[in-house]
Structures are given as structure tokens and as C-alpha cells.
Image (cartoon, rainbow, N blue to C red; front, side, top):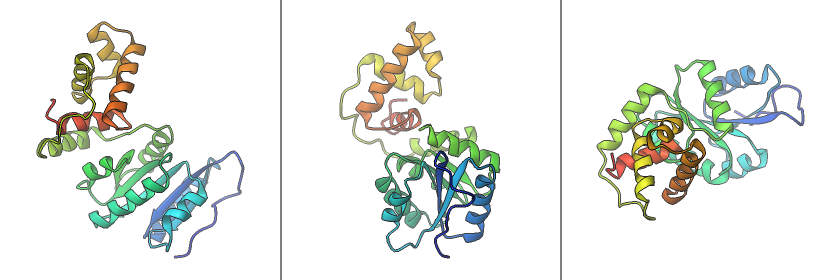
Length: 221
């Protein structure tokens, strides 16, 4: 498959969505659906591109949808290379099942969807990734936490967390929202958000989900 040109008429205010895949029909179908309302400027690159990271950088995508299929290790290598090339872009992973979920989130993916996901679910995941939010299905979240609990804990957090930050991290890992944490601790929501930002910075992660995963792996919950 050759690299595709933008689907639809180019407009300067449209966002760029990049599909990286080895399945031309899948990519072309999804590209058509996303480009049909002129919201996205859609591009497609094959995953065997001779210089994929450079090609991705040249397109300046807001969001990248990466097809990892069932071959987990090469797929995660591909995902890692894309994250290095595009650290500011949102990334959504599509695979044939969920075994790579833990690894994909660990590599910085904002969402992991299976091939049977609806187009609405994919649209929601892409919009959330563009906003920098990590989304995951509730059932898959339970499986993710179960898998993480089976992994030997890593070394304790490099920078020490305060007692208040540790409590907030435990509550995040339990699935509590920022608002419920603030209410439970008797602090303002803005203060809770500030604590969460400090936790993410100290742990070197980029989302509350990744912080929760860290807490589980470190045996804090």
C-alpha cells in the first residue's frame, strides 16, 4: 500500500488524524468515516514505511491511531517509536484483543480498543486523546488492575510523596474522582487537582490512570 493523501478537501483549521496500519482496507474505511464531516484531515501510513518516525513527524498529527494487531512485541515497538517521534500527540491503539493493554498504556497510549469497538467508541477515544485524556472501558480497567497486581512491584517512587499525596494516590487507584477525593479530604477541588498534578510530576507519568497503575504495581493499594 502506498502512503495516502489527505481524505477530503484540505482546510487549514482541520485537525490531522494519522492511521498507522498494515491493513489498507481497515485504514481506508476508518479514514473515510472520520473525514466525512470535514472535521479531520486524515492521513494513512503503512507500518512498514522505511522511515516511519520521520514520516509521522512531518505530518504533525493531533492524534495517531496505531494498529498493533496480534503480534504484541513488534506492535509495542512500533508504538514506542511513534511516541518518541510524537511526544505531544494523542495515541489510540487498536488490537485484536486486550492482552497488550497493560503494555500499551505503559508505553503512553491514551486508549486501547479492540477491532469490534464501535465507530462511536473510536471517535470518543480519538477526541479524548486529542485533549490529553486517557480512556479505558470499565471492564478492561478491572482486568488491567488484576494484571498489574500479578506483577512484582517496582522500586518505590523515586521522589517521596507526602502523606496527603500518598492518600490521594491510593484513592485514585481505587477509582475515586477528583471531586470525591476533595470532598472526602475536606479540601477544595482546585487543591486536589494541584496535589494530583504534583503526584504525576513526581511519578513521571502523564495521566491519573497511569498514576493508578503505578500505585498498584508499587503495592500502595
